[in-house]
Image (cartoon, rainbow, N blue to C red; front, side, top):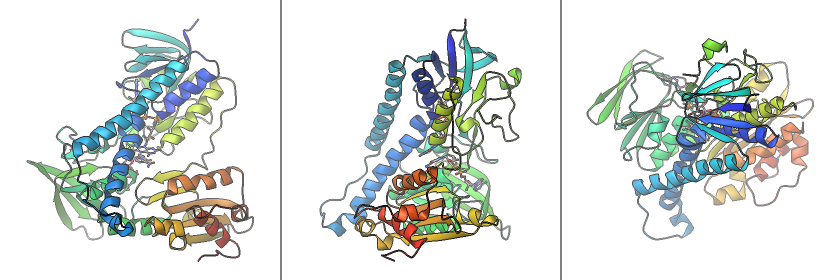
Length: 464
Ligand code: FAD
Ligand code: NAI
């Protein structure tokens, strides 16, 4: 008899959630993690430490920019970088310990070390082989490398996101390569902490894949906060000279060559699946042409009894997508019906203001034969957002012109990352824009702007 019903490889949000749900469903579960602490990329070097720095830098910005406007006078705080790093580490530590507690509570064995799969049902950790009925691979992802650029997180000059979260000091100047989520979150945090930040992006717009109007407004807001943008630029090389780096790039429109020097260069050009050392080729687990683990509709790989979830499989590289897959695959393994609605996965960028979206962009909604209507409401018409000094954004709701069914929503505004869930629930229930417009929203809240955008899909918003 195998010792376990399930061994999960990787204790990130995909793996640890899968392990907990499987244990709740009565399975005997172990989870292998090679890191010193549980929680994966997300808790250790991703979502959580980055949000701690974003929060701290936002607070600093408030004291410098907005306190006096509210009659809050007095000395402006200075940054104690070591203390801020300490706050970040405590936030991370509290959360990773929390997962350890949940493992104990749910009687999940934490097998410490790096796992390889010897055969279906056999997982090797250290010198020991553990037998199991099922295996879930939740090995996550790692920063993608960029040709001509060597990252050295310890030196702290050319870094990836992991290095950027623990820089030895706040740099006076920073070049961010890639105007995606990581580049803009961390770039805006360092800009608020005093760095002069230039973002160099290959494409002609920031945050590829986002609604076009949101991209433009978001760039404007960030530029006002001091971020500089060089778009349509291909970085060819980064050269380190003593304590500075020089970023060389070519503008795609005219092939002209340029360079910028900075104390720190953050390479944020995407992430790739991490499957090294698992021995997948040996056991016949197929990969896609981009190196993700190939799965079917039930997260089953091409090898029997071996499943895969999270950043290691195709789809958005988001913690909550990994968590949802973790719960769903645990349910499938326990003989139930696991389900993930891939059409309703929100995406949030935790800058100030936040940017949040779910469902189709206006461009995607209009791409087919479908007729759509767009209801837009600016936060300038929202009393609460104005009081928060965050009224530059808007809510944009996209609905089917014939059925009125909500197809997508895009928000730039205060707490957009919280507000978007109203639309997620509405979409899960197949709601119409009118359903949202007819729902009473408390005043004064930023969420009223969502209702106004829904009203704008019908007879018109009130405060526009
Ligand atoms: P991971 O979290 O990467 O966990 C995989 C774990 O598996 C790792 O701990 C690894 O050590 C372990 N592992 C791998 N191979 C083995 C092996 N052979 N044996 C044992 N252990 C192994 N997403 C959001 O939704 N919101 C955010 O705000 C957000 N912010 C981010 C900020 C940054 C800077 C970064 C880098 C990412 C951020 N993400 C965010 C993305 C998020 O972190 C990932 O989508 C998420 O962590 C994926 O979860 P996962 O469980 O698939 O993998
Ligand atoms: P990304 O895919 O979001 O953005 C990478 C950017 O780099 C793109 O705009 C791309 O065009 C650009 N780029 C690629 N090659 C380039 C080059 N040679 N020169 C200049 N620009 C180049 O990837 P990012 O920001 O590294 O994030 C990785 C993943 O982590 C994302 O998929 C995201 O889902 C996840 N993440 C999520 C967060 C959130 O949900 N708030 C926060 C941080 C990360």
